[in-house]
Amino acid sequence: MVEDHEDTRFMLKLLLEHEGYVIVEVGDGLEAVDVAGRERPDLVLMDGSLPGLDGLSATRRIREKESLDRVPIIALSGHVGEDFRAEARAAGCDALLTKPIDLPQLMNTLNELLYSHSRAA
Image 1: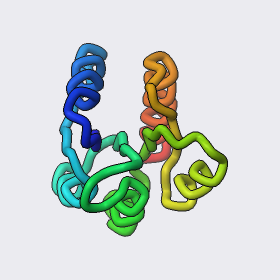
Image 2: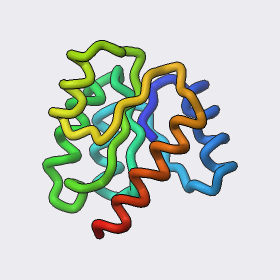
Image 3: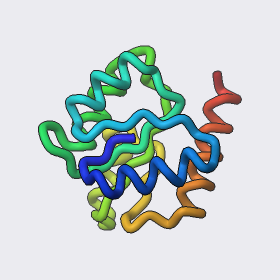
Image 4: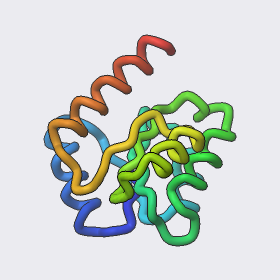
């Protein structure tokens, strides 16, 4: 999970761990690229606005790594316009959820992407 706001990171981590997910959390885009390369996550939750390297740029860099080119990435953003949605897709995001996060929608998206990713592997 890549999120620069500590409160949001804490809340999402608590909720997702309660659902049985193991969470690795980072607070900026550069760290996200580094940690994703080391940890090889099953899925990435990527905030759009991050210090150092924004979420879409971090997504592009993650996608450049052969070992991570198929890992599902969900963009989390307060930007809701069609332009941002198109940019997120072009960067390699598999889904975009707007903030504030709707927990049932997040869980459905996580489950769908993890299921389809495990079937493709």
